[in-house]
Image (cartoon, rainbow, N blue to C red):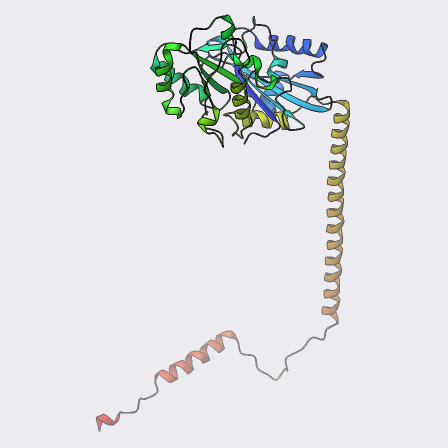
Length: 369
C-alpha cells in the first residue's frame, strides 16, 4: 500500500530538455526560499546508484519544510520518452502523514507558467491542469478510459455538461482542490449530447454519470472502500462557482488507501536508500554512525581473535597433558610363554573347524529301518 507519508505523481514533458527546465525552476524556488536546497545527481552516479535509476535517467533531489518544522524530501527522475518527449516520475515523502493542504511537489519542481508543457499524462496524453474534452467517437472514449485508469497514478474525474458552458464553466475543478491534489487529478468533460455514449463507455468500470453531474472513476485496481454511489455527484453547476460536492468527493477518494502505482516502488526505494542531499547535521550524524559501525566491527574482530587465541592455548595445554599422562602410564607386556597365533594360523584353524562340522556323519532316521 502507498504509505501515508508519500506523495506521488508522474507525467510527460514535451519536446525539449526537461533537465534544463527543472534546473532553472529549482534555482528560482531556492532563491525564493520555497525550498531549502536541491541537488542534481551526476549522470554516472545515477546509472550505478540504484536499480530504480535507468541508464539514461536524470535525477534531481530537493528538500523543503512545511508547517515550519516538517521536512519533505523529494526525488524526480526524467527519462527519454516517445516522440522526443521525456517521461518524469516524482516521489516525495514527509516526516509526518501527508497533508493535501501542503504545496504540490510537482508545483515546486516544475514552473507554473502555461508556456512549459510538463503536465501531460504520459499514458493517454491528457492534461493535468486543464479540462480534457472527450473524443466524439464512443469506442474511442471507451479505450481512453481503459488506458487512463490503468496503473493508478492519477485521480480521474468525469463531468457531464448539462448545457453548453461559457468561459466560466470551462474552469477545471482542480482550481478549487487543495494544493496537494492539483497535479494528481485529470478532468474529463463530456458535451451535453454525449451523455448516453459516455455511460456506455463507462460500463466496463461499473460507474455511471448523472446528467449534468460527475463521478470519480475507481481506477484499476480500485482502492479499498470505493463504492460508486459514494463518489457520484448528482449536479455540478458550471457557472464559475465552487463545485463543493465534487471537491468533497475527490478529496475523500484521495484519502482512500491505495496500492503503490506501477513503477513507484523502485522510485520510493531510491528516494529512501539513495539520498544525497544531506544537511550539515545529517552529514555529521551519518559520519558518527559510520564511526560507531566501524568500532563495533573492530571490537567483534578483536573479540574473535582473543577467543581463537584462548582456544588454541587450551588445545596446546590439553595436548601436553595427554602426552605427559601417556609417558607416565606403565606399559603392559604379554607373558613370554604365551604363544601368539598369526592371523593366517587363526584363519586356518577356523576353516578346519568349519570343515569338520560339515563332514560329521548324519544319523539315519527311524523311517529307514
